[in-house]
Length: 155
Figure 1 (tube, rainbow, N blue to C red):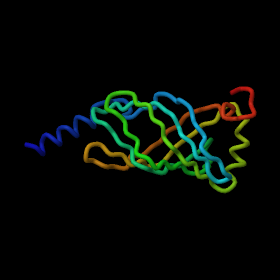
Figure 2: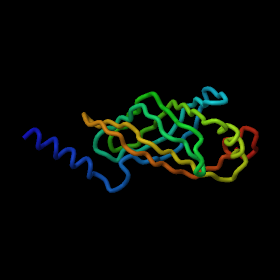
Figure 3: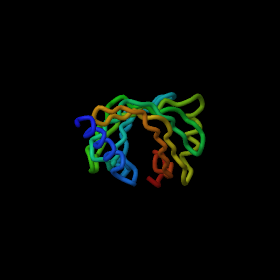
Figure 4: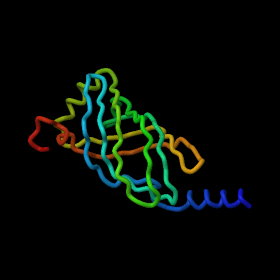
């Protein structure tokens, strides 16, 4: 009976929503911690909504950082991210962007563009109750690189 109730709980949670299980809600800003020619360290502030009936933990992972179909490097986060069930959660994620060779100069070329498409691709390790799984992440967002240009008047 106990096994049957656990299987029923898993089935209900996996079918709980026709929308995305975890949805991006809002970008709340970024705080730069350190910059070098090969790495950016920053805290990303976002709001996400967990549409599942159970809390989810995202474990430390590494994902690819792509702008306009050009790979610039990899984003790594070392801390666990906890999301409450069925509600919005404000998250501050310490991230490390490790750049590929020549990517810093290519990023500078984007500073005056009106728009670009950011894609984050890779597998993210997630935990829910006692279940642990690598979940594919394919996040895409169009943004204006001018807003990140410290020398621009359009901030």
